[in-house]
Image 1 (tube, one colour):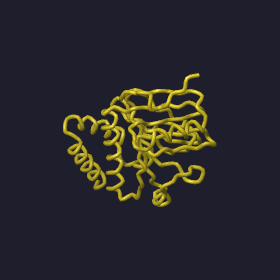
Image 2 (cartoon, helix red, strand yellow):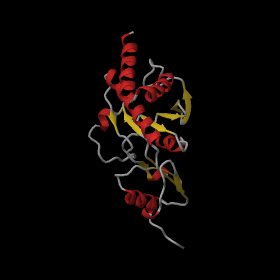
Image 3 (spheres, one colour):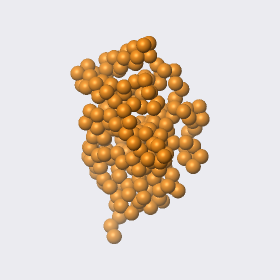
Image 4 (tube, one colour):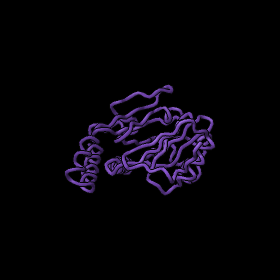
Amino acid sequence: MVTLQLRQVVVDPGQHIQFRSVDWVEFEAILAELGDRRSSRVAYCDGSLEIRIPLPKHEKAKVLLGNMVTILLEELRIPNECFGSTTFRRKDLGVGVEPDDCFYIHNAERMRDRDDLDLTIDPPPDLVIEVDVTSKTGLEIYQRLGVPEVWRFEDGVLRISVLNNGEYGDVDASPLFPQFPIVQAVGEFMVRLGSEGRTQALLSFREWVRSLIAD
């Protein structure tokens, strides 16, 4: 049997590679070999490991979506903690994942000074953001971890999935921001990102949020 090290494997941006029959010890060893300073994202479930290398298109959308959530939280004066693409994993559940972005909102105060996560003790993030450009995000890992709300953006459309009785269902409005038509707004401001640029699109989004709060 031939054994290769990850540094010998080349994955181009926009591509992903899958490994089968990866046990938990091997998964943690792979995470250690990949290190923290990298652009790749990993998802692990029941021995199946996927490593994805995002495209610039993916990264631009991810950052804009995260900025939109930050603006909403700021304008509503809601305390929060952003954990970005932190690796969330639980050996007892056989899963691990690195979201594109994530936020602690209801549990912000509890997680404020947490640097080393233990999901057998700590709660999962309240909101996870995923941008699907070259591969689709499965919800099983987040379902097992108990993430209450997942936003998935693909082909200009935002889907909001909310966990209810252990199952995800798509909803029209985010329970975190019920007064805002987020699905429609995200699609519109993503289009404006291409025509106006990031700075103006975000300024316009903040003005839109303030106008709805003032109503």
